[in-house]
Length: 289
Length: 289
Image (tube, rainbow over all chains, first blue to last red):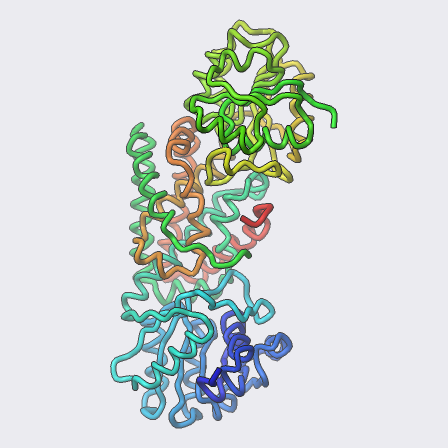
């Protein structure tokens, strides 16, 4: 396949960044993939698994020759990375990020890139991942069949958006476009709320009690195994929408409680039926884990 | 292997009852398995998949020759079945049930069997199953590696408990003994609460929003696909413990909300870390689904 970008720099080649590097290299979609990080050990892993061709600890240096810079760090590092890279970016480069929250990240990156009208910033959020971390879990097929949400800014050259879209489609993703605000509202409900709910559920159960579980509990709480610092960042960056989602959910739990306490089991059954019908329409994980 | 019971009657040979029948027949653990139900179609399925040798719609007739009667119906049918069978049970027969709630079911069955001092009732709860229903999903290995909780009554002959235990162990389960009250408190937390939480979570998300999900949502809400009438029965039969579990969980969600609303993200991270540590110790589902 024709490379969509010649040299791609991936800042933070962990699970998501590393999987992208692996997918690009396996499919011949980039001539060079440069891995940038702040820990030599993690970069060594990324290189060993074949996610990157070369590595550097110096973000400014690493991005100099890149046609595409993918910021795949935890949210709290996106701003520092963008600031470190801003002065060194190649004219005409495309910059993207893969953060789970868009409005706050977009404003941070735009600020860092102010004055660089010769580079195009295209925010995205590939809806793929797992509770595992690190390039050792990188998977060239992570994005196959997944959705990648683009939240492009007004005024970004269409050609930059188009090239990035071609790249994501080439690694198997279906690209959708949303307003950043809509994105943040939706992911608060489909991703951030479930994470907090899973954590709260785990904390209601002792390890001795969990030992009796038949497996449903494991499924329901699996995502609570995700990395706490990443989820802290996410909740902090999307706090208003996460709070709204928590409030709606708490009201739902309160309603269920009332139905049981007030012996309204016909209504409880109707509620469980509505939930089942909706749940049966949800997309499944695409591969066995 | 030596049969543990000669003739076994399974009332309600669906997913759990049918899997037990299949496991007993495949391993030569019973000479005859009699399937009893109230729908001919379901019994035909049970016979076709090999879960039972013969079938009948007449519970009184079906239990007459059984050395073991397994009541594997939804909770609301356990009482009627026990009453229909009571006068017909063979002298020396063992009666068991596999219901997800023990205190209320035990009291119903004891009442139905009052006066039958010549039969032994041993309540159990195999912690295996799935959100699927019916003998078409029966699996001879469903119990392999699972836990089967026994909540035996004082005064039950040890030999009856021993024989039933040998049967569950022969199909692969590890048998644990709990007080019925302890059982009901634990399953409210590890099973009934997660089910209600999954349903409430589903109802916070629209189908359009769910279409963007990467799979974590599917895991977290999978159990909400379970049969609403069964779960209604369960919540009703274990209402006091389910309410206590819901209250603890709601307090936990309220605490998470406060941490976010009050910008206490160090504490949120500590909470997520505690949840992750505990979650990492939970038993996983034993087989890919």
